Length: 304
Length: 270
Image (cartoon, rainbow over all chains, first blue to last red; front, side):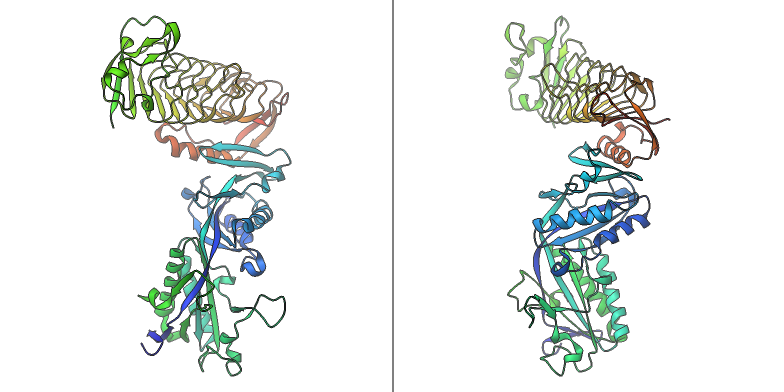
């Protein structure tokens, strides 16, 4: 360790922290006749769900489910959705399920999060049945059956929602080789994917356009993170090293703070396990000085 | 886990109301107080100790030994714990039951699980008419919980039923699901004549129907995902008591088209 950093396998780890925010989150189980169609439905439903800034919700696939884990015994996928509040998730849930799951061949949609707080899942989509929808209550769960052209769309009446979720856990990975950096970051995303209750909502789990709060332009609430833009390192107060040519970020949302910490640990380990061999030089994290987000994840704590 | 055992004395010649006997009501009572519990009310009331020999400790289980069709309202209003009957019971068993479990190792009379809202009822033998039904003046019959009958059930099973599940391993008599507003009735053997008169909503499942009402319409064969959910729910909830999983394809008859018509009879063998 030297100065504010420590080094693992030739990769320097900044003595800094990721600053994350409290969010609301929910989970859904999407099933279909085959794993392929469950995944297609889940991917469509979570599409355009990278950031609450422009998408209304941050969405992603948590994991593939075995038929034994789903209410109808069919192949399934668990997806997670995050938003600023349960109210903010209402239209996102209605539209995404209504347009992307209801429409997908053979699909069904169930609650995927045990929580005391519930919100309507079928509140919108069931009315597609135009009066022919019927409900079946089994135990404490109510399922709606909506007649559609390939049979019936089954959707659970309510889903659990938590306000203990965390959005914005992150790792910034710096490198001197763009291809090697991408390969290493992909490995980190793959390691994070094995952690339950978290998603990495950006394309392939990776964001190349990390942002800072605010902009010189009126109306833009976020703009490019110039301190981590390698092409600006001679022009601004840069966080890049002289040999940095690219920085990639992994943003992590989780249903609990613990799951976000686990995911960051898994990602960090994947990066340090690959070491500097593929051109990664350093790992840092994004924060706002610790004043905005309630959750701080110190990289050195995650390495311990 | 302590059990209070009630062994029926010989010589019972008229119906008695057993609704006062439930684990939550006898728990914490002394043997003297239990013996003095009044069964029924008014001039026909009897003391529990006059009808039963009482042994054991009151706790979350009550065991009734001995059979009599005069034991009415066994498990009525049951909210928690277990009542086991080593024999047959009379009418109205599990009426308005809210939770817990009632196991009847013999037969049950009429109105088994009428107005029930939760819990589990099992019957080793047969059950009479109006299983899961209603009583005059009540809007709905059974509104939750599960009933499993190993033998046969009588007529008008699920009369005005709104929610919950009735599983009959044997056959069901005539007019099952009459005026039903929701819930599921499943026979592994078959329905008698005219199931579903004035059926509004709800699902009747079975391998055959003796005679359909003319107001049911054939909608063809279908692969209904909700049946997988029902099968899995019952397998998880009932374990070895669960009926065999439903086949992938069933023939759906919509009805009663003389009423709201959003109910269905699903034939598992057609």
